[in-house]
Image 1: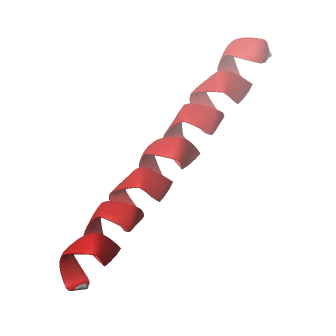
Image 2: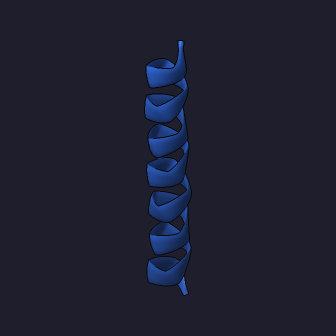
Length: 27
């Protein structure tokens, strides 16, 4: 359970960073 939470957090962080980069590229 704890391992899954960690993977979920990393996935969320990756998506967040990807969206930030996408926003920077669009500007």
